[in-house]
Image (tube, rainbow, N blue to C red; front, side, top):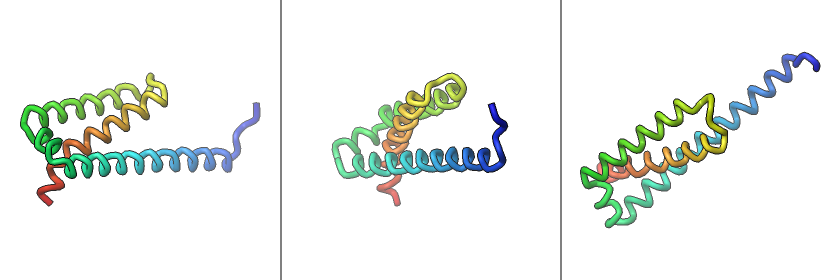
Length: 102
């Protein structure tokens, strides 16, 4: 087994950063798409704005965030990606009411 060179280490770091930024972009696009979808559907927006539903969405969003934080060392990459996309969608639903305000 050979010792990695400085170039190998920088290259691996660059690939990891590119992948992280890619997933951040996917998360932002998912959040925006879900928020737009909710705002475009008056019945769905009315359901989301109701206090019990909104509270439930916020609790689910917090739970997904905690699952992501707790699972950093033990979860598979595919499961982490799935939870991240769910978290992004929940964020879009909870923020959709703000789209109407601004």
